[in-house]
Length: 539
Image 1 (cartoon, helix red, strand yellow):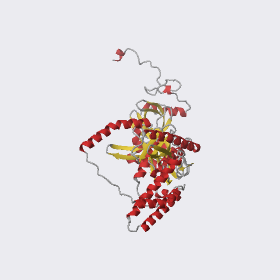
Image 2: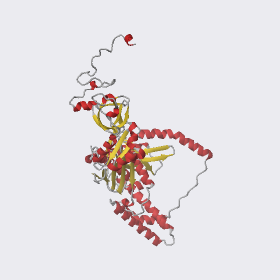
Image 3: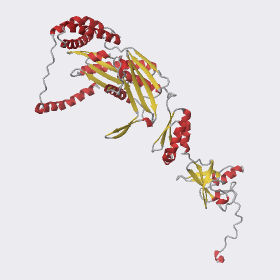
Image 4: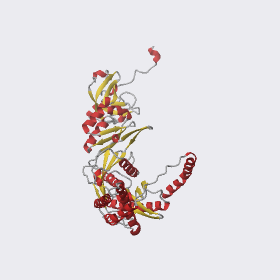
């Protein structure tokens, strides 16, 4: 990855040179900006009042206690400045700016000089990890993933193909079968505010986590479910998006989704002063705010599936990038080891609360009958079983049902319309048409066959109507199903079976009339004598 980024950077340099050349020819000079000057007395007074207290506050390991201590120091200093310089209200704003710089300087200098961070960790240690899968028993899959003071509750939900997200764009319509939604409510950082629509941050973090998980999902052919994961951040102190990646991976495995490998994520930070730099593993929120980089890396044990970088300096040298990637790999593999201790592979069976799935193939010509006029039949099946049925033009029918019993019932109802006649099997059908050469009998829904007049009875039948009437139930045997779909039926074979004579296909050839009688007797025709002779004598 580092090599690829380095190569890509080299390729864009000519484009950057062209931009600089264009700016030199037609660009306008930038507006000069002079930052306001800080009063030297205020600088000295803030340093005197706050340095020791702020250093002590930044040594508190608990996030909320540290925040309150820092706030207390700031309020005391600002109050003192306002009291000492009542005629200069602008000094209060300068003091506030100086306090922010002081916080940043103290934290960075401690890391640079001692290698110790706010929570007493060294530069490469990952915070303690706690994992609970199946935390919500009624969901399809769930995981509560905790790393330090960052906690994400991830829930996986499976749906039918009809639940896919439909997307309309200028280039056409598309659908999306995997969605990961990231929620960052105010309470996770100890705040109270209005809950509105998703923020830019929530959309961005959700997209990163979704992209990181997408690479290990099974194909729609192998796992034709729509998958939605919701990550609810319960507590946040840095890298909640990467906690969402870890929790989402475990929630999917808990739901029985056959992902190829577990995925974990880690956020890397940076403290850079001149040529000296320190890469931080698993950064806190304060280290993100007061550091120089937030580099998120997600992936499996051997591969990276998603990266995102925010920087506050002009660029990241290649040696820093490589060190950050290698350090992130070690941390990611450590986290994956912790995840594997709890759940090392997807569960072999779907959750009993998840939809049950069956995929059947039907004759595409039968789709119209399964759906029914105005969707009458398929709506009836859905209403009766609670199943969701998706039918493709190819004849592939995906049935999603809330329970196994409902699945089997819906499957039976669907296949009822696509039953195929079995040669040699008896069916009780209904006479739907009477014609001179025989009777048409519907033996299955939408499937009928012809009983030739020679197959209506054991004895010779002169008129079809002597044996059957329109609408009459009739038990028949299937003699043959031709490649064209035509079905040959026989009532004679059923009558012989009732007399104890077993069915033999050789007794009912595909051509001709009734064939030979069972037992080989061709009787009934008598001596053929008298039929021959010289035909000239019959003129």
